[in-house]
Length: 57
Image (cartoon, rainbow, N blue to C red; front, side, top):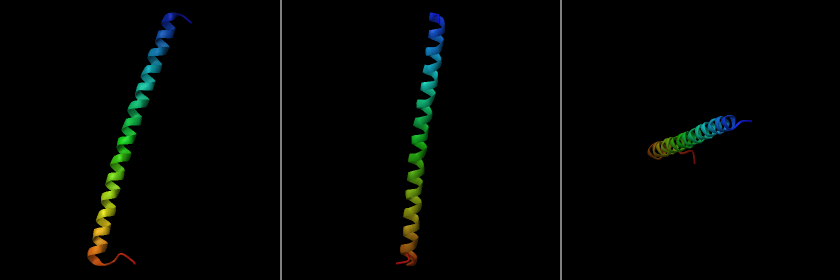
């Protein structure tokens, strides 16, 4: 394999690795957003239960 071929392969691998890191970061951000949203839903449901005394105890 020539030096140029090795350089091309390294560039391709770096692009692939960089894209993977970006997608991983985005995924983690989406998970954090989902968790925050679900916590808000849970808090709202609990507040409604407390106000209406429908907490099924």
